[in-house]
Image (cartoon, rainbow, N blue to C red; front, top):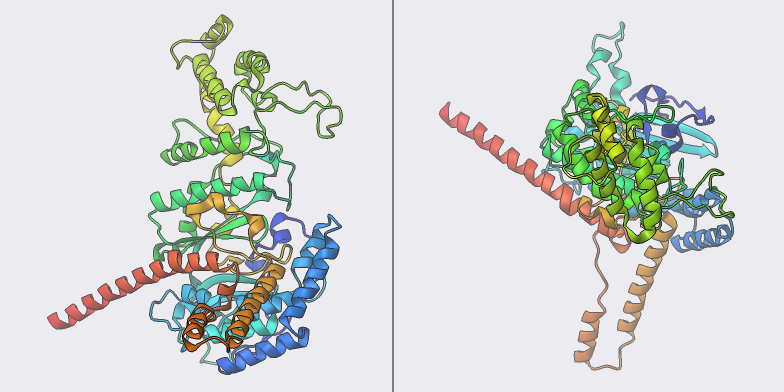
Length: 586
């Protein structure tokens, strides 16, 4: 048995978005684990007893946790501090309850095993699960974190026991290695032993193709007032359109089928592409797929979007998808959109108004036109100021595009002035191309997915496990139904505090039904049997079915996990038939 040493690192000021959110951790930033899980584990009853004992040490009952959390939430409601609000929804006590009662260990194990024959009830597993790296982040004291890398487990029972023991604030999932990661220490070459293997034999050979999209990367185009970790329902729409574009491209251009999207718990989304063809991609292959989707959308210093004519079919399709959303979510005024084409507020009591704000309609949008289209900007400024709200954002946008087409000579009749026509005749082909691409670049600058490209390029890159809880918000990293993106509300995702309340409510309702049934002694047997049927306790397989996690977890189970396992079973059957046929021929 190899015991792994503990290495602690005190959290220093976080320099970047990645470290602040801790949604992904680079390998060479990790500190190694500090406990051993190679010893023989107890049976399931012992695990649950351990969980109960651990929970009991922290808090007497679930209901007392809920009451304490409610009290904390009430006291924090008088403050606008984000930190106070997060404390109300996240605590070690609440996290312990979540792990022991609600965390979907079964769903996670079935998924990461990629084997339809795995039965978690008898704790068998597949090599793809036993060779998978897990990473735990624990916080023994405020501000101090321990990263525990290269954890691996023989089955669900071991994983569950380790999580219940360590209560990690965050769980990361890494690659599938050639050897169980927990044994990686023993693979190092040792001149005194002829039985050990070379460290070169320990390397990743599979990993889902993953993507990370975060709203902080949209800060320079968010006009809703949000920045950094702050989000609102207006800017969250940017995540919806990003998911739609990426999901469509991965399915139509690469043929991937088994794609799962998850809310990161705070301000972004994660994508896991789980087809076998995606899992076995080399680093070069992953980079090729990631680069295929990447568009240079500029930076704070250089906001030029690099798109060239003729447009790639993928980009043309993306533009067709994004433009209606751009009109609705970016051009439209609040509360629907970011008011890019609306009239800027010039009220004297508006603290956000610029000193030189002239209140012109579409001023911010028209200011981004190429210099050679200045005549269009001047004409539309006058026209829109005269029309005011009599034309919709969609009408204004279409009118702007029509004017630009006329300017470069690609539209028949012109409503533009003769000066615009003269200007077009003097225009170079390069200038005409800039004007023609301007609407596309504008839509892309606001709406096209901004990928954290480095997350996708390497097999050996950790990403936050789905179903975890974000410590800053207390919200669960739930699956997202891509067929109902418009219905997903990050502010409606349950917090730990809310989940404890839901458990209490469910059990109180069940207790009430049971008491009513027992107290029905005065009713004749026939009516009593009817009442008993009506008031029969609800039977659930998992405790998360008692809460609002039921819908997203069931979606993951029915729409992603089961179809994937069904296909794997079909492939296995075909493979076995071929082997059997070959034996008969031999």
